[in-house]
Image (cartoon, rainbow, N blue to C red):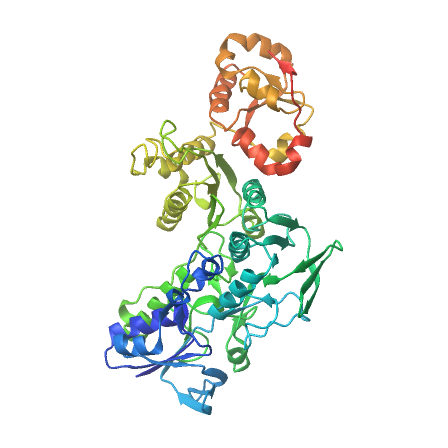
Length: 567
């Protein structure tokens, strides 16, 4: 058996290592078009920023180490230029010239290449140290940007996704004046807007300038630096420009040979098989199925690529016992300054596109006991099926504990737990680490109330403004109310509500009450009281913290301060 694997790094090398463990005698050849077959591409921004000081630390394995450990034949600087699937033959450009190579089984892991938003901007991968405009996909990219950062003063990052934010933070850590340019209305477009505003506030605290709703229209790169022109006519003189607007599969050679694809991504079945015999594919170059929406999409993440590579090798060498490839959630996390932002499953845009009905839960629980020093909120958004309680997706932003909660929710979705099942999870607790009612348990409790129709939620875009037949009941303290409240809101602190029901009945004049507090805890108490007294009521999901997150910097134009309808 000769197994040929095109592409190293995550998916390809995972498949190669698993194949060797399953068959000591197979001939396993790995073709890598670049210089490095196994490197920590997720660590590149941290090398640029100086947290990782030794570039050699990014190089996980070499052809020599892989030969010694796993008896793999790794050939770097070998690029596939033609494939003949009928004859099981590849044509290669190699340092020694053009060669052909026969395979018995072929795994394609060519990965993806960075999208260049401007065709006029050249990013010469063969000369990564020349010029001021770069992507951040390879070790050479990282070395070039680190060199530019050491000499420069200003940087522009085009694209505010995960890699873009990591690059921006890294360059800011090196002391550069950094600008982020993002076409969407907020940074981290997959993140819900009420959480993205928290991330933007942290970015600004780091001294990074944000240009959202804006695109780059031109980049003029010269010996003295790059001039970046934006769609609002702003021009920025930059010593370094990072292009980070996404990736596209590097599959042209294989598609031209007859490989079935969807938007350039290789179509595979539940075992990684393509439409060609004995040809499999893994990683960023493949199309995957999303677990909660069923949508077909590219998931360019290291974790799924590694796991898929292993599963495909299992099928090639032991098909009878191989497990199918799982549908993916796209679980991701990024650090921005003192915050972390994590995602698993679908967001609103994906659920809307899939036609899924959903209800959204907001909680703002502390990551550990409030009385223990260092307590801070985990701002959690969870989308659920309003009838079955299926967890469709979740996101969180906070200073501490975001990774744990997102991972628990990713596990819950994969295991088929419903939102109310979260109440019963027996999670570790000690004051420095969590709460007796963890943030996950609390989200389950809110979801259970919603599904059981004990709680009717309203959202920021529905409460500002309210219909004429509704009025806001703000149950925060008088001091909190005076610091900023919605116009016309009635203020009765929740501890006084039971004794002032008749007053509320008179002041509300039969209107529906939209009950709110700071984070949704006190308003739930108040909501239960007024519903028991016969009022028609809804509750603002997550309270004022959700409202402030939703409107971001615009909130001050919505809220009024001082005394109003206080009681």
